[in-house]
Length: 171
Image (cartoon, rainbow, N blue to C red; front, side, top):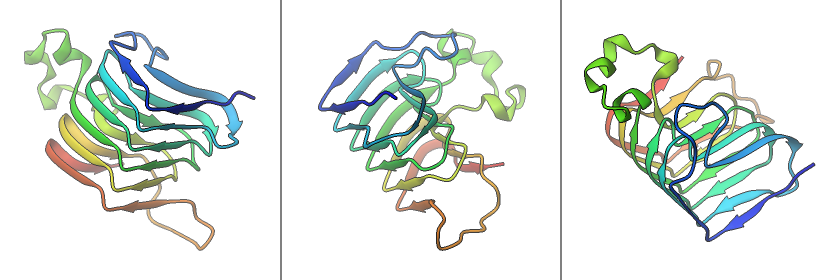
């Protein structure tokens, strides 16, 4: 299985707009990770998601900055990952980016297409993250209702969203 240890790296003009799975940085199909991380790094002008995690657990994403992401900045599709002390500034939908702002009015966009600074689909740790400017959501959570047990691997503490249409959305 693959591993990645990324620290103090700048990703600029990364990702491919309008194409699935063309993110700036992607952890995919690696299962339980042995300490993989992206820390203290910058993602500037991403034309798709800055960092995504799918079918991978144990990934640490800490102290990163994302500026201008077309689509959600962080997308976490699997449980057991940690996002701490990250800052996301300026997230726009692909529709708006393509110059079709009149079509991106909120009532015409389905919930599944709402962009967010942090989009998380399962139990993960999200602590002390800041969503500072998102066209739609600061934090988009797709999780079951709170049924936290002692062995649960989830936390949502100290997070802040401002300059977003919706600070926290969950379905």
